[in-house]
Length: 355
Image (cartoon, rainbow, N blue to C red; front, top):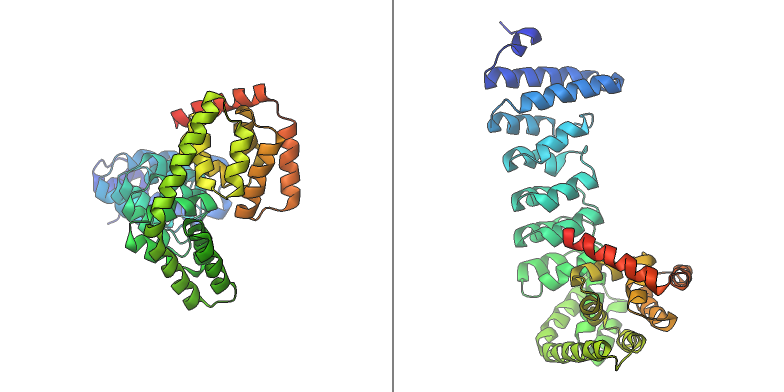
């Protein structure tokens, strides 16, 4: 004969505690549309307490049973998401209750197996994808690239493209995705000679997917030949940095020089070395539309409107920003004094070190 809820509440075995949890959850979901905030909080309090009293196997079974529910309190689902991976996986890969902020928090603190579970969700926002790409190992990144519901920011796609340079499977995953191929080509073009890049653009303008795929494959085959030129450019950039540090070259001149050649990654390297901020963070700043972080970095380094405008023009080409956005950025820069920028930069550096 089935026990009542009151009787189950007095049973201490894991089996009975699991049965209690399942019963109160069924009752809660049955009237989910009509619960008050107090009733939701009470259910969450009881559920969390019982979850702490049952085995990992029982918690995993419960997690799987409620992973698709939309009405569970966030506190309960978040608790499961931070549990052992066999418990966390169902909700990490399926639960609609978890927000981007919840998923990012797990991705920054949990195991690679937890990240892999997140990478299998039906959809992934740019924010979550960026975090997975930043913190995930090869298996996680491959899973993200093959997930058709994953959206990529320019910064995230750049990171994946760099990581795929020596990884055939990762590169193949990217090239098979029609939604990413055009942007991938734009990332490949700067790596080849100017003449070849012009021919490649001509091939792509009115090409079908198969032709574009062949063009990308051809571009990839030239990368090795171009690496010596890339090494020379990186050496030149290090020399420019030394000149700025020695006071023999102004930051404006360096930014204009590199921006005119669309040497985005060399600008990232230069700004990173001069500010002592990780390249990864500088790259994310440059590849996102927000004007203020870029303005803070270059103003703190003593750049004038000349240098900032050159950088903005480059960002506009890379990110397809409208002229109104550029004008707003110039106003932001004009209102920012160097002392305030330096203070703000120190705050950014402290936050990046803590993170």
